[in-house]
Image 1 (cartoon, one colour):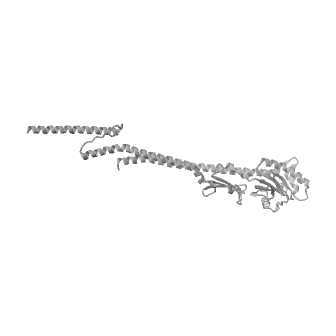
Image 2: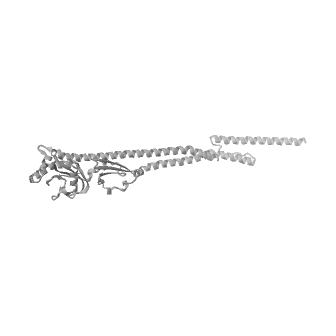
Image 3: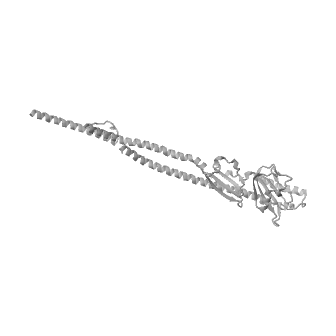
Length: 370
């Protein structure tokens, strides 16, 4: 192996190995850092989504408590609807007065919670009390046979959540989510009616807490599997649920609702992949520069020595001394070497010339003696 190749290998090893180690370490640490940060963001978003959903459920619960315990002066909601337990125990004026009293409370609630469409109380004897924002109940509607009414009764005072659907018994009905709760007398535990709260689908809209909307999906479903948020048909393909997802879920409100979180790692890694490509590109450029510099340096060091060795080989073959003017002007050891070599050749040539002259004189002297 020539000196040039040895120097090239040494330079490459000295320069490439550190770069490969630094690049590998940087790439590994960057990937791990991104993974940790993504998981932290995912946990934060998931917790915020669950918290916001719990707050929404708390608001609905608070509204129901108002109907159970609200009273002002001599008026009480529960006391007011107690007369509707049986037929023929009230007059048309009673229904009008009850509606007027409840309407004030309902209007305040609809003003405070913009996602509420209407609030009604279905009494056992038939009258429906309440108020809606451009929404009302069909006059001929009988709720007793409807599925939502029966399931509400089965809950025995807990909320029944009816998923996104169009309630046909509502005038000007649109797809909505409804909450219904059976009302009972605090003392006698006698059934007094069904509280019905109809809300727009935005009641469960938790997209505001989703800081990674292009790569994550937050879903809310009932434990029966019915979807509440979002509408799966509207999910873009870029954030679609796949096998690459990080999945988290938790149950809230007596395990009736399930919040699920899907984080598309593949989509996120594509977004952060640009930085990884830049890291690798910079390393590749550095390697290319180092290889070029190593090749140049090895040539710079070995070429003068190779040239000098070729001159010496030529001198030996021709049995003569040859000088070289190349590299003499270099201000380093190579320049010194070439200058000293040329001085040595000059000295040897002078010595040889002197010896040849001495030999000539000796021969002339011997001839004249003869």
